[in-house]
Image (cartoon, rainbow, N blue to C red; front, side):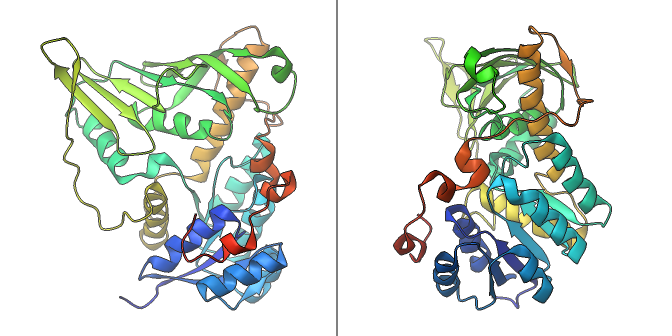
Length: 357
């Protein structure tokens, strides 16, 4: 074990906040120095669980006493903007948010500008794009190990396109090695399209990439993957686990699954959250770029909004970036306001457990 290097504040210690705290408390070069949480009972229980004595009811009171190196903001989405800007103004070196970054594009813009103008690293959180093996697969694709990419697909863009859909959007851009520049979409049901939420929304269409490729989007779940990418003889399925890679065909014409022989990684205890945290810490330390940035999270929100706009415009192509920054698409109530707000609070006994569950 080495002496703690990064002083970390956890902003929001619900179920996911505790997951972050588990990770930050496990690393030899990080130390949780403060926690902010609106529920006083949960704050006390989680503070005791992780041995943190500096406990605060909100981010403002925390920052008046403590300016950490890194702030992990894991509140519900509706509170991200205030917390991120407050951290940037206070002099925090790196801040992370989870998904989605916001509901309104202009709110995402303000967060990113607040961080960029002060040299603060703004990173994404618990996203599949950060998994070590997924990053390695993307490098192999860029290096031509599997041949030239000729197509891609998102096999199930539905229900939570601005929440969980962030995963598929960012995986598609990573594995296809290009940004989404134009969206053409169809969507249902009509009653959801009339609202400003993604709850129950199903989108099909095409994402046109900056390198000329097209990523087909299916509103029904046609596989258990989040993104599929293929070359002339290789098929890669991106999931929440290490990617599945198939190359060549057997005597029946079925694809042959490979054992990719991914290299071992020093940090892997918490899946793709590990990759997210370690890349944020590296960015704060060396000036590198996190595996997911705040700008990436904004792009995912923008693509989801563009998809809905295309549907409303009778399937017209919508180019990115969007000019109207007031456009808004709210995530599910539990993502927007937290599980407490929808009547599903975490029992205190669970919050006190030594391991995240």
